[in-house]
Image (cartoon, rainbow, N blue to C red; front, side):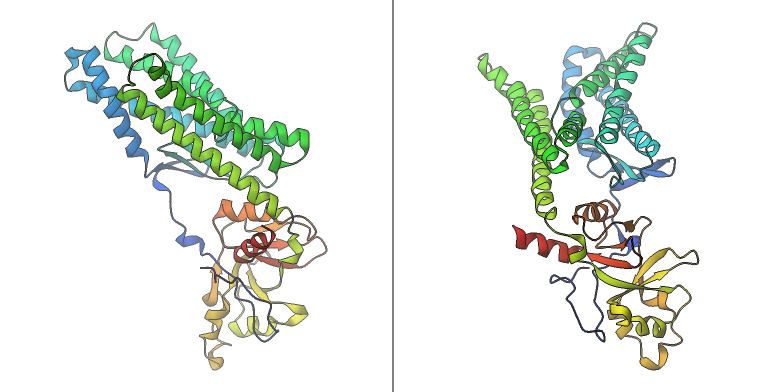
Length: 395
């Protein structure tokens, strides 16, 4: 993990110790339940909480409106939770497929307590692409709602028709609700893209969409909880539970967008080249001794390992190098002291651009370092710890 100080400039005989993250130890977001065109699909660890909320709210309501169901009302509520899972996965799959159509690498799809999210590599994004990816999800739900509505007329009466009606209503609601203009909703990403396109600044788009999301959170709380109070009656458990769940989700997501915008504004002031450590490359079949000889050559402070195609795949850990006896360095493979990095950890950027794009790639891959391939040749390693230090000095 990262040294809290970050790597420090050192003389050639003392290589920089980058904060490396081994791709094999990244935490999974939940239980893997499938894949979509190579993208893993996870059932988030918080999804069972949403199931419990649905059982606690819809179960009693069904028992009162359909006393003939008895305890089966809770089975119907559970079936509704499964249908909701299908709707969420269809929503996220639409995001993922649209992102892939634009050439973005999609990392994962997750269904969780707050619905779901799709993580994709967006460093080459544009306002138009961002808006299209965001709109794909609500459009998928609108299509599901239309199909369910058409099937409602031929669905047998009773529980099947009840569930089909719930499918139509919930997907229509999700489609409309997600189009509201505030982060973290899809409509917030559309608003973000619009402001980004008009101003030319992604930071401004995030800030506007984030504050709009907080306004929506307050309106949701007023609708579910304040509206009954204004009419002279106490809100029921259903209103309190869903108002609190949706309102807290919106408030937290909007707050995250605002913090991200403020952090991005600080990062926009930091030049990438000011934080890069010159990096030398060594073939995968090399020894530890070969890597040691590269430190200090042409100012190299970091050594990375490249595969047979010349693609860097790992970064050498100097602390592991120091644990190898000098008389064993010539016969010890360099990969024995290197940390493998995930695909996409090498990015092409100019040294005079803001460090923001590189930091976004780090966040997407959940790594502590990233390798920058420079336009004029050569490579430089960026360490997350140093970025944080540089941003804090700007604050």
